[in-house]
Image 1 (cartoon, rainbow, N blue to C red):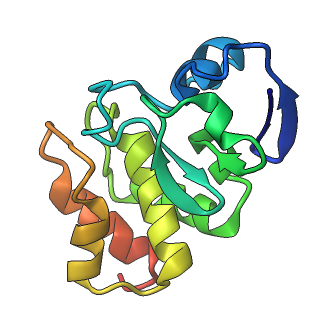
Image 2: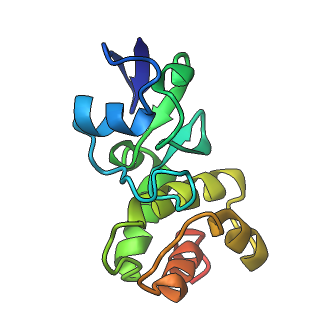
Length: 150
């Protein structure tokens, strides 16, 4: 199958039914996307697909052919992604860091869609992403910083 990831086309020989996260992490060695729950319930496996957030731990890689996939490794090449990554660092928004990649992906998608989201829209966008460390206030502050409101 042929997948377009972070601006490059990859011919991958994995079974098309293999969940995308395994193709990313094991075949392509893009290990920034994390496997959390394996049930698309925690958000650690989030990637951008044609600009929208998609969870990758269950979805078959073959269903992503013809779409542009951006992982956490590719976000820094975009102005919004770079700004979000810098805001997460500035606000110390990561504690253990396991959920961080998925959150950065989600915040990037949010700010691409709504450059200055209100707190309710931010909370709605981040609701599917679990953080057990309690970094939520710093994550919300990072969104404000990336949106240019802090």
